[in-house]
Length: 88
Image 1 (tube, rainbow, N blue to C red):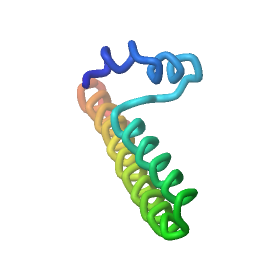
Image 2: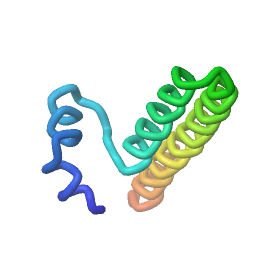
Image 3: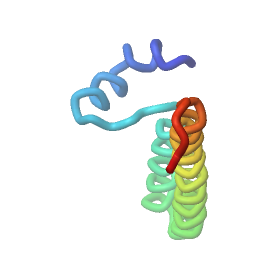
Image 4: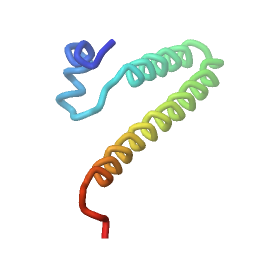
């Protein structure tokens, strides 16, 4: 699913209005956590599943944000290196 098709969905329109960045990772993690929450309401053993899914969501979100920060840093470094003037 590309960003253009994602922006045309209900989730994309809500994210655009609220200023959130939305991608397939966020939708997958939201559905996963809601399913784990429903399982926790259904059975007490679901609480353990809920903790595991929340931990997985946090680790995946951390990896995604680190990758985005690294991309921005690389763009800034390329801009600095492409300038003809020295850094001093």
